[in-house]
Image 1: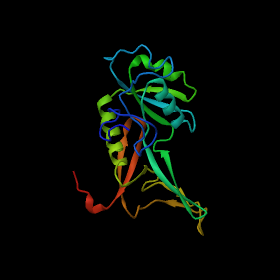
Image 2: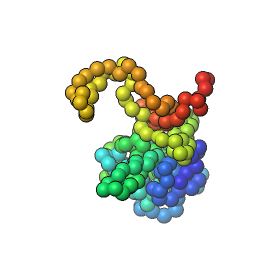
Image 3: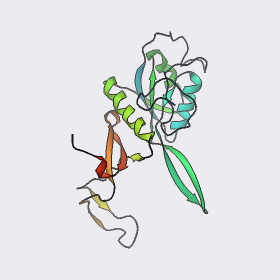
Image 4: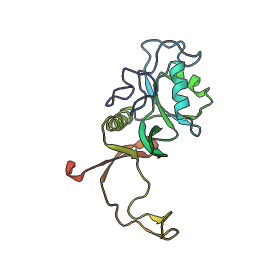
Length: 202
């Protein structure tokens, strides 16, 4: 798993870990086409892979076999089945895998059946810093989820319970404070729940 504060840093391995996988982009071996012919001094560039539905982990595994180490942020989802507690690791940003690799590896990644599109990242430093902050949060014990789209002022419908079907507007979100760590390039954010006493204005 890559360093939490340095996405795509040294390291790698399987999909285990709350921050997913991360690495230096190219490792020896793998399938022909992706990592082949890349010099040791090739510049590593961030790309955002938009995957086909429910193919995030499959793409990450494909890239590892092919010599490109992906970053796939994962969070823990706990469910109870018949009295047993089961822990799943799910993609924090469904439909996205983040790749740091040489430009020559792009074509090989696009040959995968799991990729819908491969997006260039125009502001590399900002993207890496924002992704690094999210990975750092995933390494803590705080609850991290995809930032909800329901915010104060949104019109909503009640889905369950005795008021099911009624519509209204969100006035205030109560409970634990949520700090949103944005990943601006994909227009999403990770929501980290914590006590308000731990925050200060900047």
